Image (cartoon, rainbow, N blue to C red; front, side, top):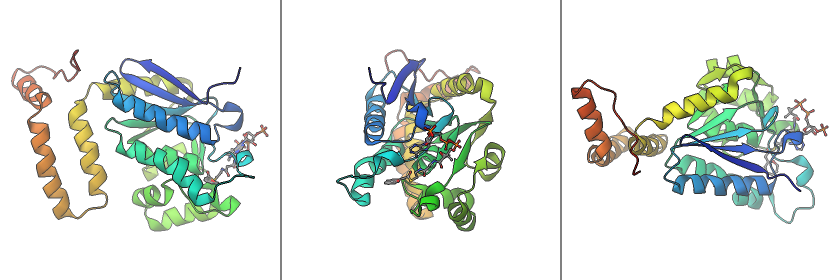
Length: 261
Ligand code: LHQ
């Protein structure tokens, strides 16, 4: 029987989506990209899920487009991106729940974009990222030209893209390409523990925060201030806010997870 290209598992309000083409370092074919996008949408609609983790099976995170799967296509490059990669990246950024890119190994090409696209990026010590596109004389895609210069600045991004050199975990942390680096041996448990901690935070407020931050990346300060004032009303009217303030006054930890949610 053929292996599923995306593995889905739930543990304590955390849904983990694992890219599962281990022998090719989880290089992406259409099935993988379309199923990952579907599973993200399913997770968004499932009230039992509060955090989504994307990771890779085996020693790789994602080696980008499966280069064995590109010849003889009946789609142009533009159509291919618009059909598969771009909806995936838009879905991650538009998801109402936090998405963690759990980068367990090498992330190359569109796989590097996927590693950058999460709201939080957790890396294993042995993980690496390569803006590999110029090795095959292509333009960085799937959001790399948007994410990377915002993290490292235009010039460093251009250099990384021009030489396609491996960025290792310690440098990634220093450059702001990831938030945390965990030991290889305990990586999956450490990611789960981190995600479970994130799942106890106020889900509604975080959804609005994601919306506000996402929009602010391309807006003026004036627009951001107006948006904050509107979204703050939605947050302030929600039970999570009442619970947070009550817990503060009662000098106890706030309980942001309710059974009926
Ligand atoms: C692979 C791949 C791979 C197939 C490793 N495909 N098999 C969008 C839209 C339209 C068209 C084109 O592109 C895009 C976006 C993109 O993503 S373009 C960029 C495509 N990706 C690449 O060019 C990366 C190619 N891979 C590599 O450079 C290396 O494999 C890296 C640096 C990722 C890892 O190197 P190593 O750790 O030395 O592993 P390896 O090279 O030995 O790979 C292990 C196996 O995985 C190997 O198969 P084999 O049967 O020999 O064991 C590779 O052929 C296979 N593999 N990447 N993208």
